[in-house]
Length: 440
Image 1 (spheres, rainbow, N blue to C red):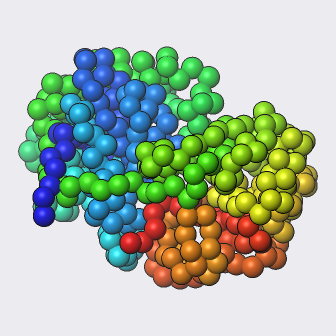
Image 2 (image 1 turned 180 degrees about the vertical axis):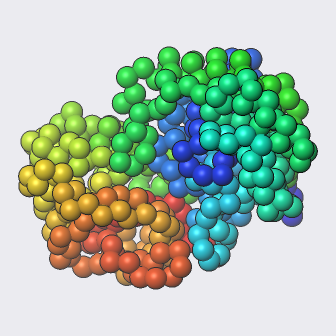
């Protein structure tokens, strides 16, 4: 099989979430870009928010890579978006080896698998707060856990003092782990968060200044030249095409309430010649009347429920589109808005589009997280009944009523059925999972 060589890359990971890898990744993207390099960002795993921050830092669109949800061909096709870049900086998710318990058709979905598949050198961000030499034992365990992993070294984070740094470095030196940087504790470099993690890039009050500060911080405390030298990659199968569009003219909801769409899907639609027609429900804009399909991505409609309920041009536009028997599809937040009622965190009930009978509540919060495999029992835009789809679900809303016909049989990564089956009524459909790929 022929292959293509990827640009050399680094995958920024950590032993666990909350250790500072996003700050490091954003700082590296901008610092390397400031040196005149073309830097391609990626996100390992099913994340809807980080890629927009990456794009702001690097000036190139960031894409998700996912060894559980993507087969080898799609993985290679998306990784090939790095063509023409000088270097890749990918950000991991959760801990380096965290993934699903059982291997699916493709992989476990860990950041380590992404690094191994692409050959990118792993840069482990280690929080040394509350420890010193002991941090080396953690790093040593990560380096030896998978001997096939291209492990490059560590960046020490939250260093309290020069003495603290010296002791932590002594531990790393003892086990032969390169220290490529040491970041002092800085409480002012935290990105603001909300219930799904970071706030969205478009909501940050001063994103450009924040990213510039991260880059300056990294330049001061990390050996960028050493990082460039240790970056590595491997050959991947010759790329194919990105996923094809579900229609020719697609009205896409796009604003602070509807922004969780995977970049590789939108890019595939555009490259295949589809016209993507963005509109803002929060600005009370109706979907384009000439659209073949209306697509409502996920996002934060529960934070804007009252405003959406009052957006009559938007709601009437949805209903007029549905009356023409042209399809509408919603994912997660978009699915909730297609339903009858959305209950906000205060218990107030807001009337939604009513194109499905779904009633959801953010007052009765329950965490829903994980990969999903769906077998369609009815068709949806782009896929006929019988197709197997792979996606990811991440929300806190609870279903109170789901009276319509199920769209799919939906299972978690362990093969256990979940009650969030999605819904279909006439030409309107919705799911709580975000589509990543169809199974070939």
